[in-house]
Image (tube, rainbow, N blue to C red; front, top):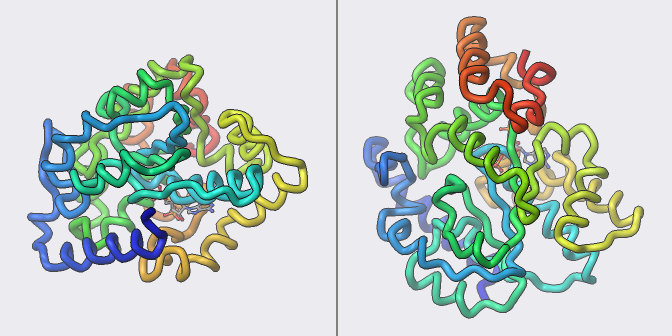
Length: 302
Ligand code: A3P
């Protein structure tokens, strides 16, 4: 089985290789959407559709910077608490990062397996839908997502540096960033909101009431926690606790994945005009939708 250490080694090796690429070569387009060459080259995306899902895979789905790492920590801790440290197979964090060789390990790995992805819901391999794999989806308000992504571009060797805040703002708004237009992504989940195998949560609701979020997530995956365990998971996966441990869990990327962990940092970055542009885009794409309401845009973005 792949160990956490060997996973970290594989990712570090890809980061080192990415550092040798020019910014222009770090992203490429596949079916119109940008992807990081060093993590998910075309050869990976071409075979992704063949992925063999299992009903008991534990799937975590998020657009970049919506809180994937946090939820991964929450899920791992819930499973450890609920099952008495039962081992869950961890492959590379995202299925699109898997090469054909990695897929052999993935196919043979014992259940339950963690499966993560940033792929648009329409590009998630179809077998995850047909096998009725349970998918936890985390969304975040678009203004803080953009800010977090801007800093990620500037600190992650597999992504090109953002030329400037204004340039990155325009790129994000037009979907010219890795994994495409965030509004498209949210709208695609709107269509799957009533699927009983899909649970959508928001970064902001988790931040406001982590204990309730942890109870809901455990129930969704059919896991039972005592109230003490809920509190333990909440404490162990708070931003401060995860950041403190991040040198161990994420080596040199620790301070990159655990940056500020707050709601509302957009106020330190957006100009009034940019804020208005995002408000208009939100209204254009998501006004009147159920997910638009769930994101509670007025409270967190205005
Ligand atoms: P910021 O850049 O706004 O600080 P992802 O894991 O999807 O890349 O998301 C990264 C974002 O989640 C970062 O946001 C990071 O700080 C935040 N984050 C990571 N762990 C967290 C935690 N335990 N609680 C709250 N936010 C967390």
